[in-house]
Length: 92
Image (tube, rainbow, N blue to C red; front, side, top):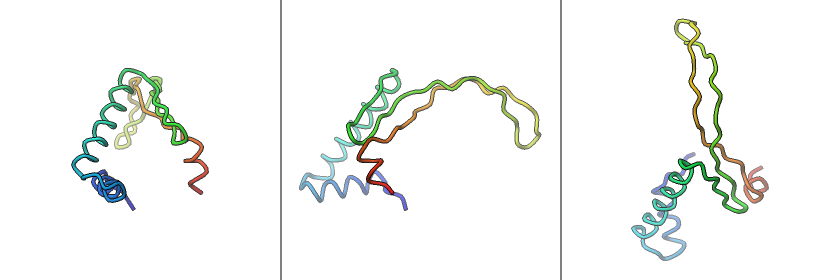
């Protein structure tokens, strides 16, 4: 099962009485600021939910699955998420 951003906006709008347009604007701005701060290398901590941060992956040797030939894989930055207390205890 997948919860889309649209479905999330509808749920929050219904529970809060705020219009879907307003909720969507807040959700989109929140995601925008999370992404922009991660691009700058800032750690995002949402207490009890979790922490988003950027981790640098080292360069390595990969393998082309079709040919089996070794290929260099360049270093890259990836987003990692560490669940917070409520997330860890809420999912069993």
